Image (tube, rainbow, N blue to C red):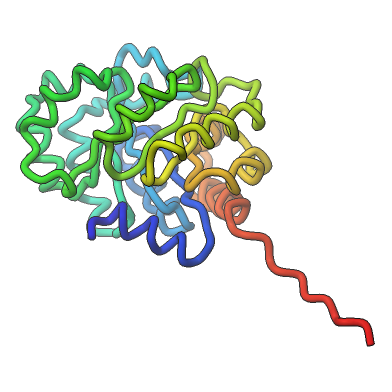
Length: 276
C-alpha cells in the first residue's frame, strides 16, 4: 500500500478528514522554507502539496503569485524542489505531492521527472494546466500505476460524463475545485460544493479532496462531512507573507495547521443519561 492509500485508510478508521497543505518551495527563503514546512508537517498536516514556483501561475490568486515570485527570486527551481522533497522525506513520512505547472516539468524532461521524483520520495504530482486528454505523454513513462499518482483535477463546470472519464484514469485522490476563479478568491458556496461532491462521488471510489476558496477553519468544518480532505493553500501563504521576518513564523504556521486539523475531526459523541 502506498503512502496516499495508507493515509486515507488510517484517517477513515479514525473518522477524520485529510488536511492537505500547499506551501511554495523556497518561500520566503530555501532555508526557512524547509524549517517552516517541517514545523507544519509535525503539527498535523496529513498530506503536503509542495508548490513548484512558476513565472506565470495563471490558476493562482495574488497571495500565491507573490509567494512564487519570492521563491523564484531565491533561485528556487524544480531541481531544488526535488532536493527539498528528499530533505523532507528524512523528517516526515506523510505523503508529498508536487504541485506544478507543466512547463517546468516539460523542460526538466518527462522521464527524468518521474524517475527523480520517485527517488526523492514524492508520492505524486498535480499539474494544474495539463488537460486530462494530454496527460498520456507524461504517464507513458511511469512504470507502475500505484507508485506515483497523477492527481486529477475536476472543475465545478465539469459535466458528469467527463467526471467519470477523468476518475477512471485517476489514482491517489481526486482534487475537486470548489469554485471558478483562482486560488484564494472568496465567494465559497457550500451548497454548490456539496452538490458537486455528490456528483463526483457517484462515479468514483477514490477519495475526494476539495480546494480553492477555503480560507478559515470554519469553511473547512462546513465542507468536511462531505469530502475526504480539504486543501488549504492561500491561508498558509498569507501567514508567511504577513510575518516574513517574524521569529515566531514557524509557531504561527504550526498553530494554524492545528486549528484547521481540529476543524476536520469528528464531533465528540454526546452521552445523555436515560431518564428513570
